[in-house]
Length: 429
Image: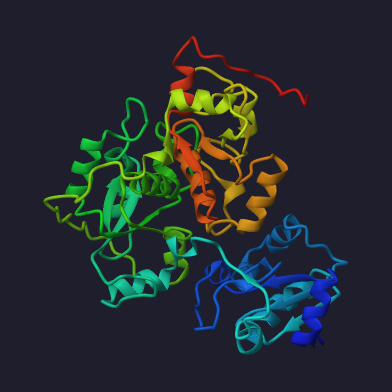
């Protein structure tokens, strides 16, 4: 296999002429903005797509490629931290009959080092941390972007301590989502309840909190399917922490799967929580991040706002309610469809195959097509808040200025018989 290389000058020219599909084969965390090899600038070359070399190990790798719209006749340029990394991906393309492949070998020494060459990064990339970042804390170090203060690592779950006890990141405590949301309404708990929960878990407003969960193949036929969807639960907890006012909330990108993939030690110790006396601030500090039902009704009528339905298509058109504890089927009239994936316990359309967050340019493009745009105030909702929180989190990561979660969602809306609802495929008019 003889693969051509391309110079910085040649790459600049071909990108300007829109003749190339540029692919970044580094880890998603480097693509998002982390300087994993101490490059001069973090992020990726402007217009590059993310296709980490790690993914070539997946049997359906080529389906990932095609789902990104990268086709056999495209002119493709690959770049990574080193030539071997790019060659590995080039070989996979060659085996899949992609003929027009070149490699760019000067990302660190020429492109990132030259401020005149365009790069991009995820606005709040530092909120998504990687396994080595967490490992450095466990080992007593201070990773990039950490203020050196107290850190609490939380293994999030919904009424499933076995998910924690069967294997977790060393030193992590468990946090049941029920600590922060009420099972009566599935909304965030009261300010007083949240304050108490944080203090019981050893968390103050100044604590750096690292959250993650464990994906365990949720099944709708189970009594509590959410118990197997721990990483959505972690992001739900993160939303409530941001709302409350915790200043340094982090998500381990990809959750427990990322830790396993890194080959790091897994613990089964039941780590004791270390309570603190006072959270340190009044709650909420960021009340604007949560929208309740009266405000949601006003947003539906407004021209500069949208309520975004982050549910599956069968839920949206009323074929299923999506939950074994919600009877009514349908959608809130006037809301915009922001398709989550297959059902209430999966977020395939917002995730990569390894559970890391999807390339943010792809999410932005999908939303733009649905007229979900940053110029509006957006409140994301689902059935009870988990999927809505994850969609919100993606918009927040991108730095969109007015994003919230409609906390009551379909559960609260459908429980009031006076609230209108719709079923069927919406009219295109």
